[in-house]
Amino acid sequence: MKKTTYILAVISICLCISCAKELDQKPISSATSLTFYATTNDFIQGVNAVYGNLKSYSDRQLNLSETRSDNLYAVSVGGVRDWEGINSFHKTISSNPYINEAWSANFNGIYQANVLLDQLDQNGGVINPSTLRTRLQAEARFLRAFYYLDMVRWFGKVPLVDRPITAEEALSIPRSPVADVYDLIIADLKFAGDNLPEKYTGADIGRATKFAAKGMLALVYMTRSGPTYSIEGPGLGLNEWNLALPLLNEVIASPNYAFVNTYADIFSYINENNPEVIFSVQYMSGSNPVLGSTFPALLVPNSYFQSLGQVVAGSSNLRPVANDLLNLYESGDTRKTFSIQTGYIFNGEPENRSFFKKYLDITRIPANFSDWPVNFIVLRYTDMLLLKAECVLHGAAGSQTADVDNVVNRVRARGGLVTPKANITLTQLMDERRKEFAAEGTRWHDLVRSGLVESTITSWIAKEDILKQIQPFQTNYIIYPIPQAQLDIKPGLYTQNSGY
Image (cartoon, rainbow, N blue to C red; front, side):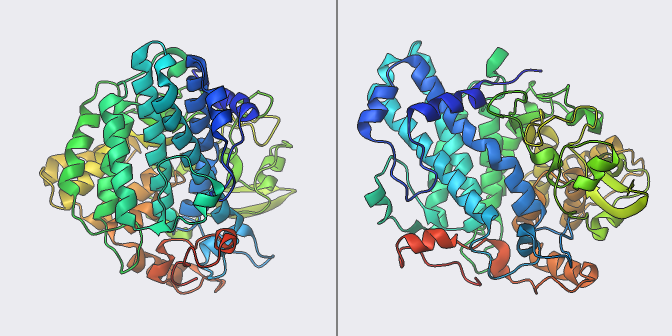
């Protein structure tokens, strides 16, 4: 299985330069930067380090999107876990470690991208061949846009930083309007789409491509098109579905991607970077230090592994799949049996609650819980097809039958469902996406973008919350609070998001 070298390279670059773990920490000095970026290989390692900040992205999507959504009923009576405040819409979660991680990891990636881009401008003439300089710029700008989109979807307004800054400068940069942050994201993705290659070979497989940038840009236009909910969140109500559609068509038309006929093959450990995958976070197990992933077991309880006679730890407690999702799957849907474990026996006692097992291959359990060898898919071909259907339902040019009904029925057929549907509505499309992308971290973003989050979550709480642990939903909870640690650095620089 092919693996890119960027995760390995992040280790060596971190030994050469100081990495800013949060926006307030002092960035590397000009002297250090100039000393490090002196050869072509230095610049390659530099962009690899920017990729390296993707390592925690997969866990973040499961902790902040999947757990926040109606896919999991992650509450208990046995003590407060970090995820319970996320799942239950608590107001007092500004010090939650998952939220802190989202802020610091993304800004670390943005910071490293800015340093690299600055050094490309100053010293990039040493790069051989010269065309590589433009590609590295495009990769860094793709990743900067990637990290900023993640920030906007979690926090709304964030500090806008497009160059290396000092610790003192950071203390004077306020949060920028979401529209301004989007302007940078769009400019970066357009540059990446114009300058990245269509595909890679050898050890470079897994890097961002032209089509990854175009698919991400389409998602940006769609996210901006979502409703504002009268908050300063990711939706701007711009109705840019017609801007997203041609980008999606470009990706769909590329010969590099295709509809994989078997659902399980998309996620196979021996079939990574298959034609379904447009962009994924690349992991490599068996290294020292550990460069594998943790997400395959993140939502799996320890007792399940123990029931298999394994010592690898999963989650200390179960985050059960919501009954509402379990009941949504139709009889015979193979996506349910592949993605969800519906009970097991541990110490002679049945555990009847279900959990996500989508990324597990129990024949390939690593010795170290943090060293799973499988990649995390961020964008895939089926997503492009269904996003196109969403644009058509919002009025973009296209056919209700060909671009919506036929696509949805093709996806359903792959899951073993032979009865076709017709005249599919936006709500039905979101239900199909929910089943197709369960445990892939898309559900919360889908609900927000579609305008269905308030009605869906309110109704779900009424049905699902048998323990009466979830707080009433407010639209303020579409985004998360600014981490308290950031507010404390310079009181008054940031204002906390409403509702927290």
